[in-house]
Length: 341
Image (cartoon, rainbow, N blue to C red; front, side):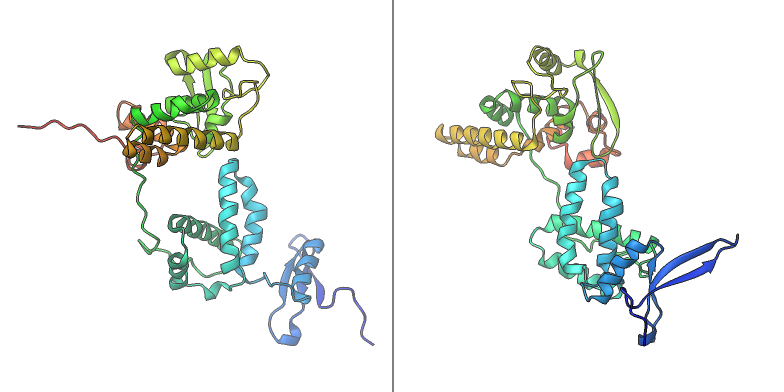
């Protein structure tokens, strides 16, 4: 009578290393199918989990992209220091899994990737999802999950066409919303336009020490500092913050000395922007009203780039690796030229 086991077809294999040590690894027995055994790894608990997926007919991940998705989420995603970056990747992964998770590596080719982009309503976001898929694919090759190269390797212009956002935050637009905002929103707009910080960094930058406003970019991880005394905007803000109640360590804080969340900023911006747009419309300026409603709080970073003296200064302020990136995405103000005759 065959031996009854708790985990049918789960077998342990042993081998001797070069130094004589004994190693054990686990496999799912595939002899009755006439194909090689499926390796389940050296860790027994992990091997049992993978055995359960195979034996109990759960959605198969071994040999599928889902296997790489799961490992990347567990091992790679926590390595990102930026919460915003990690959140964005997790969101993109959630879009990829239902479509590609149960597909085998050899089932995916360039036409399938292009078809995904064609059907994706959010075209730019679809490009971001394909970038993540390529990243995970590369990891899967390193992990030995597939030998198939990335289907779009070496192919140019296969993604959706993208165009840089062209929106200039003029003095008039800035002043219109600034006038309708409360102190928290005004402070955020001042920090972002004075320093070029991203909104997450503007929210989380600490109070200055020794007259210097130190920060590390949440996205790029680059360290920098500003001399507070050289900026009238920052000097005034710091003086007011030093007199405010509470013990919040952040430069941006509420009037009661509490930390400001992203939702709080979003709500304040939406309300102030709508009041400013309504006021412009009522005074007979519908064009201004439309422009106000088209403006985002993150556009304050572009305004900082425009306020910088030249492209080189703007690129340095925004901590970009190249001036071309600054010119394409952030310098929105038209360049003044001189007629030659």
